[in-house]
Length: 486
Image 1: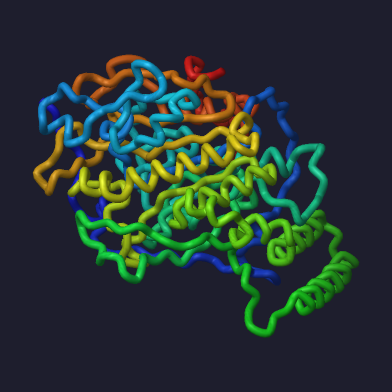
Image 2 (image 1 turned 30 degrees about the vertical axis):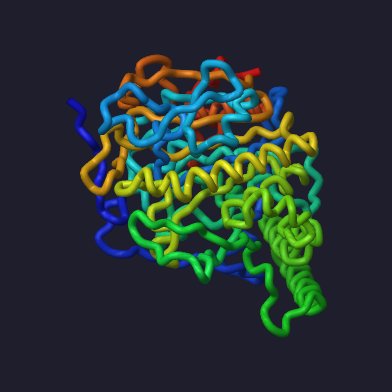
């Protein structure tokens, strides 16, 4: 007999009242802000392995996608297990996926499915999928003692590479869209941060003002709506009356102050602070950085292929970023319960699972992923870009009595890879007849992280040192999934 985990409570995190976080704004002349996030410190660089992927685009489906209704359907299971959807053939013989992912079915020759992902770190815990560490914790906040995310390791390697020129206007190697993880719920979820490496290796997080179509339906349980909007650089719009010339004047004044300080105190930290300040200015003034986020010059027909939604716009910008050699780009399909009343269910479908997936989530995701893969392939980028799709957990095999939903489940779920370094048309792992438990070849989040590192040419066993000086393997002991590697 199966014991179903999860809770139908609206927040799904055990929160009984709204929690809020104050997000720091850009502080050009002091305080905690963008300069501190960009500051680099010296440390030895470990050698990299040869990898097929130059960049990674991670499409993160927050909330726990019901992958048994997407890539691991069970048509022979009882009705309260198998659900409403039917499997269909793909362009790889013997591999079948959901009927509501018709575009994805045509990319299976470039895709590797994992149907046996499992972890024991608790529901809605986003730390394992970004770092590989399985640890029960408060999933509504983060700590600087946690291990670094994959993107932060990429940024750490870039900054500390002996070949790295101090080109302050260059894009960082880790960019996260459309907002920091949890912003839409007024919390800050763990995982995508630099942790004990230091905040200087955090992502460049964009900001967003999500909205829904003016003539669209009012969001409600079982009636999700499409989220619109575009990510923007933090503080990219200058305050009224502040021109580029005024910024340059302010920079000149700051440099004069720093010169006087150096005469008194020549500690190396002053120089680091100065470089940090200069890079903060350059995020405001760099034409290259602004251009990467400017979709106005894209072909309108291509924009329609992506869909002009928030998820579509972020994914198109992700392509523009890897085109500019950004190494790790995250696009989260986020939810915005506590900021604006849109996309009520997201992928956290405790109720109306099939209505939500059929009417909004699957068609929009299918369209965006297809557009992204086509776009990358047409530009010769798919063979050097790894596209990863995953959630922090899965959903229960048995459909609940709460309006046809599925609850939280971490004991068996799925994810997939496409593009660089991947042996297309492959399937790893098998779930049991109810998609409840792993039947063959369990895969951990640490194994997924190790596979991504391997594709990037980064040794999964490469150590980084925590605050006590202890060496910690970046993939937390995970092993690459060799069966899917080209």
